[in-house]
Each structure stands twice: as C-alpha cells, then as structure tokens.
Image (tube, rainbow, N blue to C red; front, side, top):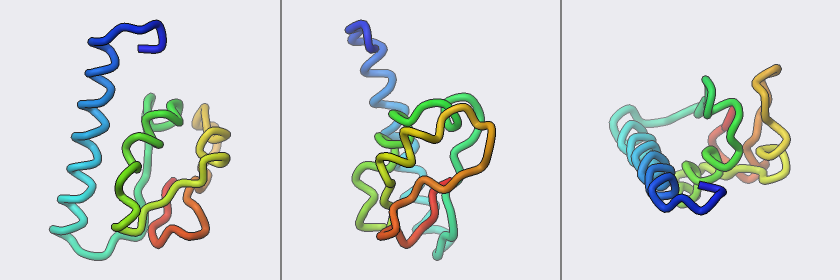
Length: 91
C-alpha cells in the first residue's frame, strides 16, 4: 500500500471499514462498552489500522490520542491509546 499498490490500499480500506462496522454493530447489540482492545499482529503493530478503524466513531465515544497511538507499536506492553476526551478506553 505504501508503495502505491491500489489493491493493497483497497484491501486496507475494506478491512478497516468492516472492523468499524462490527464495532458499531456490537455496541448497538450489547450496550455500554468499557474498552476496545486491539491485539494480535495488526492490532499491536499498526497505528494506521487502529487510527483508520476508529476514525468516524467519535459520536460513539471513541477517540484516539494520535501521539499515544503512534507510540504503541510492538505489543510489548499493554497501553491505553485513547484520548482523555474518549468515553471508551482503547487499548
């Protein structure tokens, strides 16, 4: 994607859209949410995925801190990447 591959870019956008859709749907189904946890390879290592997934979910109380999100790469420790303005914690 970073090298300009349009199919890779489309794949990234579709994946993030689907995750965003599932987060919204599960929030509607289960009610109050305490936290969203990003785990495994992409969740722990791609600030860009986390950023894109959460983009547009602000009305649901989900706000990332851009600086914390970019620093949280590698999955060595559990850390919060949500903004102080977020009602829901992002880990």
